[in-house]
Amino acid sequence: MSQNTLPIGIFDSGVGGLTVYRALHDRLPNEHFIYLGDTARVPYGTKSLATVERYAIENSQFLASRGIKLLVVACNTASALALPKIREKIGLDVVGVIGPGGRKAVELTRGKERPKIGVIATEATVASNAYYEAIRRASDSAEVLQKGCPLFVPLAEEGWTSEPETYSIAAKYLEAMKEFHPDALVLGCTHYPILREVIQQTVGEDVKLIDSGEATAEEVEKLLIEKGLSNPARHAGERHLCDDLDHFYVTDAAERFAHVAERFLGAKPSKLEAIEVYGVDELRQKPER
Image 1 (cartoon, rainbow, N blue to C red):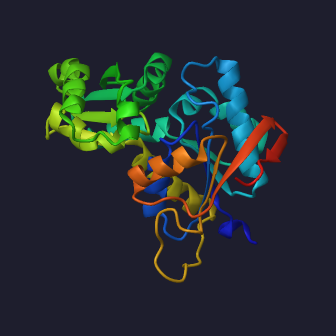
Image 2: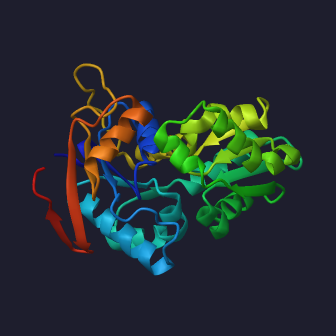
């Protein structure tokens, strides 16, 4: 198999990275993907830097062992804390979600003298200031307001996308953001695009929402072209989300993962396997269930 036809690896701490997978799948129909959801050890946001780095390296080395040409770190916490260590360990091009999301927000507000950019994310991602720093690297004039919205994660996973309670929670979380009047708002958690309509209605239709997964897919496409790694082979027939050209792995709770995948993507993975990650270089397949 030539390097061009190798899959793209994606990992997340759980199911949220499926929105990044969807964005990549939609933008790159010639590519196929291997996804790892570390569902046994979610959430990463409460873990120490050393632990997040260890988990991220283990996940990355698992995907590298499956033969990938590029790695996408869909987890915001791992993107904020572990990218340098991952690159050092696996020797492949690695793309996180934070840099692309921050750069896209600046790009879409270019032309304003002092653009206002909001960021909503988990409390851990907000505390890391990773989005703030990514935005400020791309623009020294941008005003940035960040807000943690932790309850958006379970609401997305439960499929509560239009319930009155969800709108009520969004209104409380985003009250200060509305007063800030952002030109653009970064959805800085992979779960948040599932609640896009609620968030848009709450902050106002004039606010540009930035899906970090879509921004990441755009940058991955550019990187593949730049490196000459794009897959030139078109697949026979029409591609579908979660079809048998893509392979999904989880470290626990495969049935729940499949159920949430169906909520997020409208389809269950055709190929879904449970694996255990014991150490950086020690991987063992779980028995068939």
